[in-house]
Image (cartoon, rainbow, N blue to C red):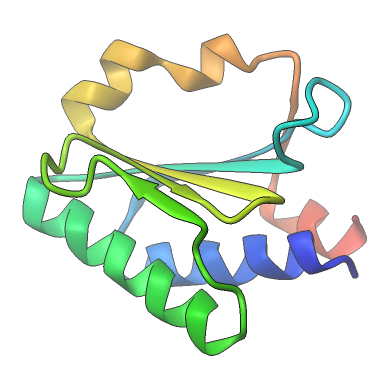
Length: 119
């Protein structure tokens, strides 16, 4: 299993742990060179969004994967976490509907939970 896929699994678990909603994983390796995977999730309010981001940062940091950059943390509307091979997007529900990254990146492959183990 690649490091990117390990990071995806850990980040997804960290988002789940803080009750992240509608977590999607998009394999964008065939679409762009900016990253291998996008994780997209939303939270009910800015505090939950920040708690989700904090948990992902803690879990991946303890595993030896430091975050290269975090954008949008103060607003709690859309937080982008850049780990190089994976990019984690944590939204408020309203911002997620507005930006609709799933539609923009529809050329990528949407992965289901069972597919994570087979990649």
